Length: 140
Image (cartoon, rainbow, N blue to C red):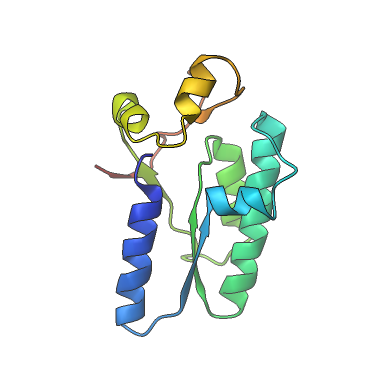
């Protein structure tokens, strides 16, 4: 809803045009298959990012650029993924999109479910303890 998938697709197309192989690991698609056993609790989010990071590492080892379009609200999880890749092989992008915009783009109705407390741990409705903004590159 923040535009992660849109940016990922545009990046993938740009890389293709210059002859680079790239693959997108989209959070929604990964949760339907590889991570279908995970929810949105902190430990599930950590495992989701761990698995995505390991798959991204496999792509990197094969010479394929992996674009992981996922929500990763905890710095410790991002830092752990960064640590398994060689320097320069992990580029982090933070999509700074107002909650109102995300809610307006919510075709799946996840925000409504979260506000109704039917989804626990929805990223944008979590407590202020998240550490998203530390020294990240922002796309506006």
